[in-house]
Length: 341
View 1 (cartoon, rainbow, N blue to C red):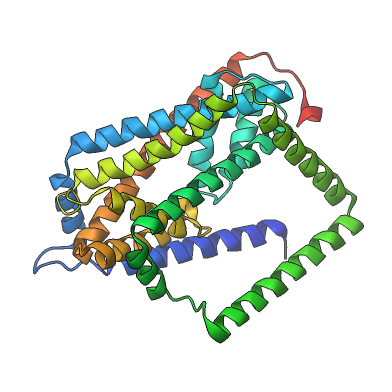
View 2 (tube, rainbow, N blue to C red):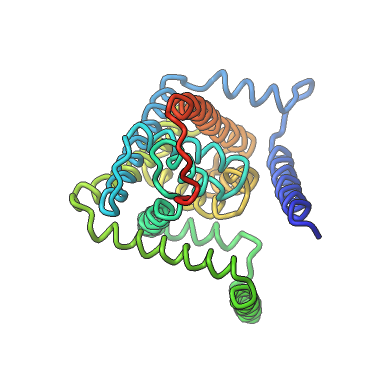
């Protein structure tokens, strides 16, 4: 099967799954006679406190700016210092790409930074990997914190998910994961052995990872780097809190509800779907209903508007950043540097 056709079919399958999950989520909205689901969503939007949504948007942009500066801090030890504005544009374009191609934004932001500051993609990608590892550690700490405060509720919610992690089901699941992992590793080694291009790609990737890990060891202002990492996730927390305050159905939920929302959202966003669309719309409403007794219709409407508002912000900021990047690149003298890519 041609590679382009295979990629197209995979993307089509992702879109189909996303659409199905969104449809399943919308079925949770119960409307009165003569009212459509769209009318219910529109009414929920009309009732929302727009000031809190604006506050959430401002917090989001500040968190992205801090992330852009943290990326610059990782690039400096390997000999590059892009403008913070360029790092920000590349980051926002990456978020935009992630909405279309799951996990595609990481490569995209590196390529965008290459166009702006001629930083080789292979080297900048290593710092992105380091960023993701740091973020994963922060996320695990937040999830652990949420389970600490809401242990009983969250464990009960996880047990309602269609996952068998006990007894024979656990053994079968582990066996399947093990077999799949062995097959994938064997295929990678076979490909590397038979294909010179694959060997070169693996060599460049390894060099990129090594460069990225060295960069975090050589960050000049380590305390500032740690502070940035803390602030990014604190601001994510503040964003969720602001959104909860924006809607009548959730405005009385407390800090522990935000932590629970993080834990459930992390599970949903782990699915390889564009921006978590679909999985987020199914799990978060179920969590709000199960954990805090929010009516399912209100929970679904809240999730749709929250996710749509967040997505709209990324689309606008990403599109503007893409336009600005194009203008900057056009104004620069053209230099052939394909060998650096």
